[in-house]
Amino acid sequence: MEIRERPPFQAQLLDITHEAVIAFDVEERIVYWNRGAEETYGWTAAEVLGKPADEILRPLDRHWRSRADERIDRLRNQETLRDWYSVQRRDGVTIEVEYSARAWFDEEGRLAGYVAVHRDVTERRRAERAVREREARLAALIEASPLGIDIMDREGNPVFYNRKCVELHGIGIGEAFGTGWERAVHPEDRERVATSWYEAAKAERAWSDVYRFQHRDGTIVWVSGRAAPIEVDGVTVGFVGTLEDITAEREARERAERATRMRDRMLAAVAHDLRNPLNTIRLTVQALLATGTNERELRVIERSAATMDHLIRDLLDVSKLESGYATVERQALDLSALCRETIELFEPEAHERGVALACEVAPGLAQVRGDSHRLAQVLSNLLGNALAFTPRNGRVTIRGEMGEAGVRLSVEDTGPGFRAEDVERVFEPFWSGRTGDRTGAGLGLSICRAIVEAHGGRIWAEAHAGGGAIRFDLPA
Image (cartoon, rainbow, N blue to C red; front, side):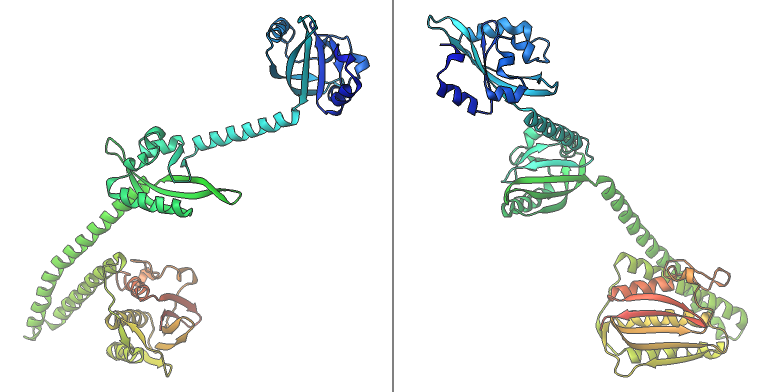
């Protein structure tokens, strides 16, 4: 029975399907064409029956016709043909078709032709190509990334590394698989990193750390590592991680730290060596002053020696405070008394300069816990600066009051004040906005800032008409 002679119910079944069902004879002429074929290709059965397949289907593969004998031989051997090709519909639109075909035989067992089922997979293949293109772009991006990118399974074991990862680890994914990656971690960091990572993986949480890899040739590579869970429908299926090479940054930091330590040692040595002869000079000057000879010249030497001693102490203070070596001993302080005591120390100098001093501390000022010696140093530096730049008949005031962040102390003067552009720079070491009248090394305000910040406070300068002010807050 030929395909076209199938009983009505079989023909109806073939027409119900949306897939194209097409039968060909051994010469690949069309002998059956269902409604699915009409919908797929745009030709009616009446238009195509008896026509050669390549005339109607118009495959774009130029080798289609030359492979006809091969197809027939495979069908004769009862193979199922499966493939896909691009063809043109009747309207000239190109579609992609996936097909499967099986031979059918006559009553005498001779090959009579074959039946093929065609499916229009144009959209599916377009989507698949889009996915492949995205995957190719992602793969290229991963390989070109300056970061090491790795994928781990649910247990936290690596299953993929990009090229940068291999460069940072010093071993390939084959060696790193399972827990093999741990051998690439520096021995001093290995236990800590492995323990923290597998704990994070077990808890399905994000992870980060800074550690070292050690290559077989001894090369040390510092990395900043991060990882986060990969979730699908709310279920963790693995982890993605990144490794950033921070070797240059760490080496620069270590060089800076070594330079700082060397500077501090040098300053301490120089200060020690300078203070010994300086003390000798001062003692000798005091002995000579006792004799009453050359008093004027000796006073000049004494003041110079005192200035040098003050400079040396400032250099040592700023070095210790900036490096964090200076200690702050906290105890309950009466700031009102501390302000008055500082004023008393500077009254002789203020009287000589013709400048009035005032201490205005609000009643009930809260006590703070701090280092009385260091805070007295702050007030002395600020008061000394204010006196140095306040003209005769001017006024310098230490003010204490409660502020939003705790206790606020201010040293205000009626001198020329600060230029607006200098307000942000006055606390920089060795900087002075008054280069024409420099009275020190420019370390006093830098030391004040370091001490206030060591107490958890904040210090700043304010410029206003008729003077300037330095204010600082201390937590109560």
